Length: 128
Image (cartoon, rainbow, N blue to C red; front, side, top):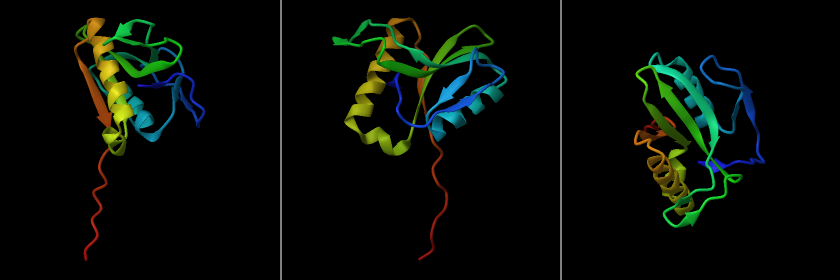
């Protein structure tokens, strides 16, 4: 989940399984979009899906401010939501709060298949 208006760099990609041009804001989101596009069980996905102004856990969430990273439609008919996040950001209270709001929001909208896409750990180890 991220703010809808991003001030940073945006990478735009046209992917076969995405409804429109994907505006991606970091390496994790780019890798996740490519992974979803290659997944044979994914029928279609949307990027940066705006959350409407519904109240989640007594928190008013303005629709123009926040989006979820991916809404995924699978071949078997079920939907899922995935949020792309850097591992280092998971310990930040603000990120944890946003992720919890996203999870609760989508649960209220009937989507229980909610999860995170986290960047791969660096497997390089230095010998000392």
